[in-house]
Image (tube, rainbow, N blue to C red; front, side, top):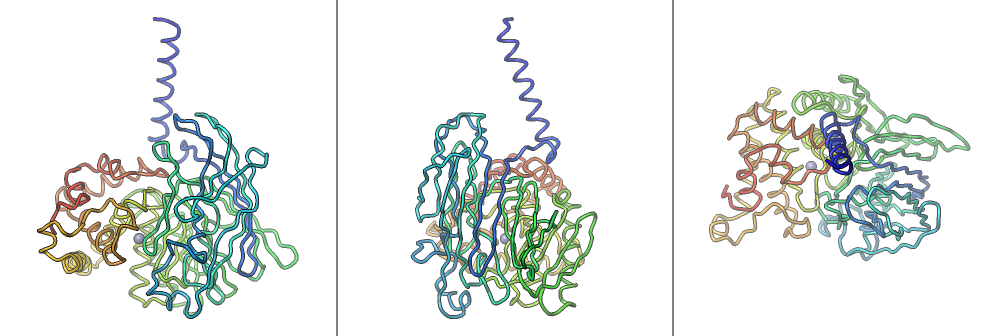
Length: 480
Ligand SMILES: [Zn+2]
């Protein structure tokens, strides 16, 4: 044996060990890239600076690093808007209001760098980095300012409440050696976000109460402004909601601090808080421990009804009690199936939506709401059947495939029937085939293996088994 061969063997043993350590032990040994963001909110603008440490863990060299500019979907003239035109009245309540991001400076490793705004709809920032070879890294700093529209959207001001998601340049995830560019859409969640170790410093007027992805680790107050520092390892997004009039209800649940931000009715907030805490307990028992220290639910203005974020979710303040309840269960489930186990929500939305819906079904059936649980299944079946007419299904004229981009759906109802209803029926069919206990055991394995990673449908079938079952649903072959 030559020395070189011995070295190779030692090296592969080391790599194998590292890989094993990373997958077997989860969070502690999983090294995620660092992302730092500082931002100041003032009026209808948030401006700031991000610093991203890009590590090239692929086999290719890169000469550019890309970021999604989600806020550009909110700009005037956007091709892919964040709302349906038919919802304009609900979203704006009157005059249409626009947002958008402006990039004012970029450096790479401290040197001024060139960049272009590109993508199909000015949705991507490409920073010219010079060659970054495998195992090399680059530190990319971006100065930006984002205009916040007056709108009931993920990014929007509504009276005293300010929703701040989508507001900063978000590093494009690298999958199979390619930066994944996300095109916005008028429904769905158009994200493919990698998990990052995030530090977020936010300056707001001192009068604001802020809901974010962690408790602040520090707060510094000067001249009527306060700067909070938040830290979260494994965050797929940085978002917040701020208001001068928020009250907060708090409850501890198995070492996790659950918070409920609301204005007005404290009794209803207590119910929402208890439900969120119950869900954190139940899903932790079923799928694996909740991966963060806090979870916050915020009642705010949101056309979409509910929105999942890392360790945080928004629930539409104008929804009725039942809608809020359903949204809280569904969005809490997304902490496992979006925040913890990531996916390609642009092209395979059914994966996390189907699992979130299946988790709701499990919660209902195991917590004394059995008949409601079976109503959820029957409701999904009948909505799907009434949307897709049988003759179209039999003749092959209906596209019931599931792995396709958000923009390919004919509208919101087709999307809901495929991603939510058919997604739910697919996971319920899986449970019917192998039994609930095994279904939960396999989901536990899936959660552990892909915690803070991005799982493709193939990765998921690999973990859960019954690949033919899943592909027959995903390829549109099953007739429901
Ligand atoms: Zn969802």
